[in-house]
Length: 89
Image 1 (spheres, rainbow, N blue to C red):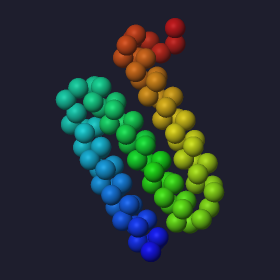
Image 2 (tube, rainbow, N blue to C red):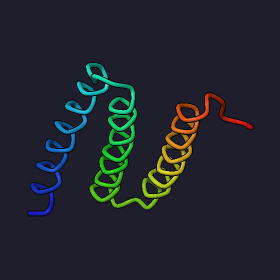
Image 3 (tube, rainbow, N blue to C red):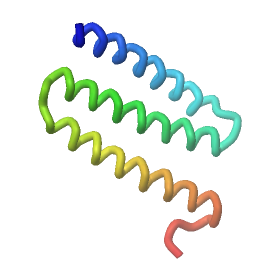
Image 4 (cartoon, helix red, strand yellow):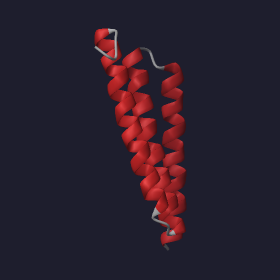
C-alpha cells in the first residue's frame, strides 16, 4: 500500500515541479521567478526524500539536507543582490 502512495505522491510533486518551471519561465516579475526557483528546491527535496523512503537508504536524506542548505543560501544571496545590488559588502 505504501508503494502506491509513494508513486502517486511522486506524480503529484512532479506535476508541481513542472508548474513551478512554467512560473519560472513565464513569471511576470523577478520576485515571482525567485519564489518559483525556491519552491523548485523544496519540491526537489521532497522528491529525494520520497526516493529515499522507497529505497530505504539514509543517504538520500543527507543529500536532501545538502540541497536544502544550498537552496537557502542561494535564495538569500539573490534576494540580497536584488535589494542592495551587491552580495558581498
